[in-house]
Image (cartoon, rainbow, N blue to C red; front, side, top):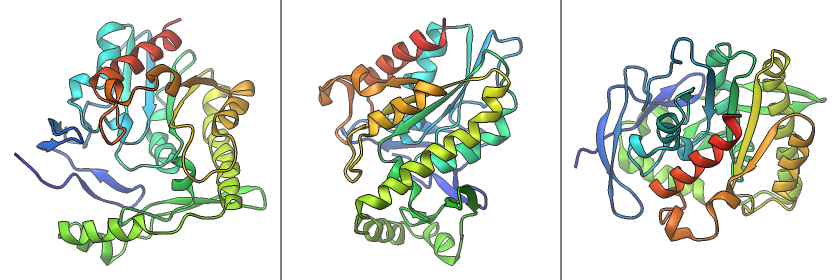
Length: 283
């Protein structure tokens, strides 16, 4: 089995997937899955086909990355095979929070025009991520609301990140320590909720103003921690600005049929997500 590092430090986003990978890893169900990346570190090239009728830019974390499944089984690959009028660029990176996803989208969002789509795979754990300055032992960018204004802070990359990349044991220790950080009180999650809304609105308003449509495809709507109704929060945003797609309803309650043992979608889950997205993106 070809193991190896997946990530390297990035001064803007905290970390990025390394380029020119060809690795075989073991997923939560004990099956092998392959990770190959291009010269930019993407599992699929990030470009839109010339004269594509409709362009779709996808943001997300390990679910968008396709953790545990081969690239051909990932929802965007399935969607392009069944809907050739769609040209999809998937920016998903394992471990990213909504803040990193939106920062990373800035370099690509200018390619979208009227009638195109920005799809945000929003996970219930995003509220926890928005409160963090580090994730799994790595520094990350973060935002705060100061006087009603969004303030962006770059990742504080130090010797710890560089040392982590040289030692898998140190990486496991740092992840173990991070997992034991106590959950913040409910009022902190409420601040993260307000930050999430402000961040989504600020980053998508220029797109909406030029006719780009935004879809929040949210899932894991019952995360541990928030005392507020996560689905109602997304529904409120979508009532006035975005489209919403509740992926928990799409995937159903059966863990074994649509998800791996760690909760990530299996190939069947990715197919269901692709079908649900097609129903929204094609009309």
